View 1 (cartoon, rainbow, N blue to C red):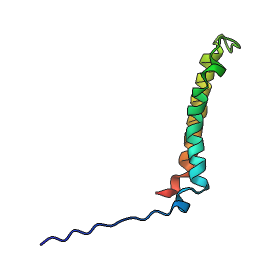
View 2 (view 1 turned 120 degrees about the vertical axis):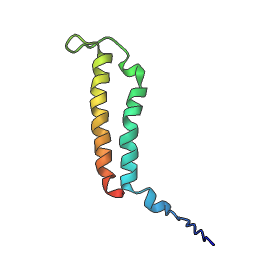
View 3 (view 1 turned 180 degrees about the vertical axis):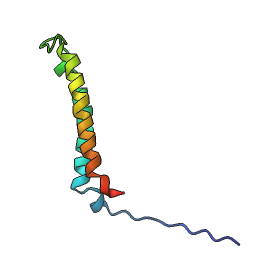
Length: 80
């Protein structure tokens, strides 16, 4: 005869929404919000090194997004 035991994990909402969780959410959502503001960077001027603003804004945002994701990973590193 086999006995199956199941556990129900009760999650405390107050511990889920602490400062680290909010910082993690903001850091992860910020690049998406900046990419969504297409009207702010959809133009040829100013140029930087011959590249229109649209292209160098995208390249800078890729680096900024990577840094923000790395910071978010460091914030949540000790959670697991």
